[in-house]
Length: 126
Image 1 (cartoon, rainbow, N blue to C red):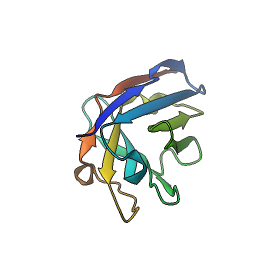
Image 2 (spheres, one colour):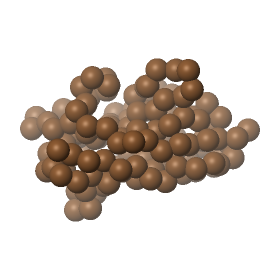
Image 3 (cartoon, rainbow, N blue to C red):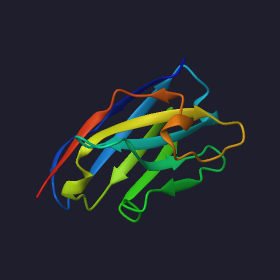
Image 4 (cartoon, rainbow, N blue to C red):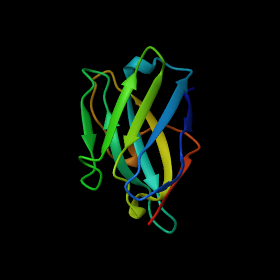
């Protein structure tokens, strides 16, 4: 059983930056595709970014491309989401997700992930 714990959320002004972290335990982290999703009030949970383990390929939602960067440190069992140039519409609860993938594929749909963290709130003021 994999446990995921997010941290790093908070309140920031538009144009600012935050870095989210997701610490994983209980699995072979280096063989997991990791993803970030977000859910704003009254909206569906949506894909933000994902990173595979081999060789660390990444994929982003169009809404965050060029502003957000996903990365991972397999030695620390941690995945990060660096968020720059934040906008009020980025306000949401951000969730980390994991799926074992021996093929190293990227996944962008909620149902493709097996494990989820509890979420961390990000609020961007205008």
